[in-house]
Length: 304
Image (cartoon, rainbow, N blue to C red; front, side, top):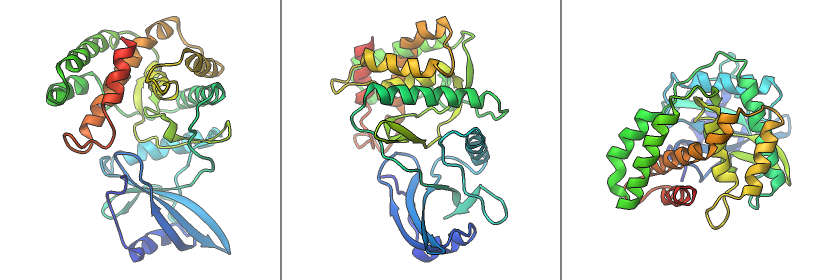
């Protein structure tokens, strides 16, 4: 469940006054995700209903929020389908609710796709390429919280939760990641979490990309690898070459990959498997994780 922080109707009504978005009609917790508290909020102003998403940060600090708001405002300026933060009457996008950093954004139309087609993958590849190109024009910067040191440290702390074979594979992936991290590959601001549940479609038409709260400066090919590992994974937990190639074609229609990036894509897919195995191990408690970490261990085994 992703509604760790709760509140009263009166408290929410007082908070919404800052935004002049009308009267509160309803709010509903969003029961997906593993980090923040998210709610759908409906208001009514001048007889018109308006829909928003309220995100209360459970991990990020007040100092982090200006980066994410600036990123979303920048992408919105470039016409990309992202939820630009709602501004208060004083022109602020960073606000506080329940003593935590909080952002209110418009709810975008569309639904998370369930049956993934080559057209879905092509569209998500295109928008990822557009995001990378648009963010190359900003001076925003956020260090990668999932860097090499984090990976080694987390493996050391949580490796006991995995069986011996999986632990050995994680160690191998981390060692290889240490080698490729030294290469001068293109870097920039990445989404970092462009899973199916962070994109919205109407049919096969992309209508929105959401949840940029893992965005940071990283290898661009790492962002592509993360995206392929989710969008192009089959029911057998293997990567479909057809879906993967469609995603890459979409991406390269906006930004061409360097030869070394394409060559090292499988290595970065393994690094992505390790990253999400570890972040899922960190969620919840031992034996009661919010998402199954073994999904990505099994994918790593199939890619090795």
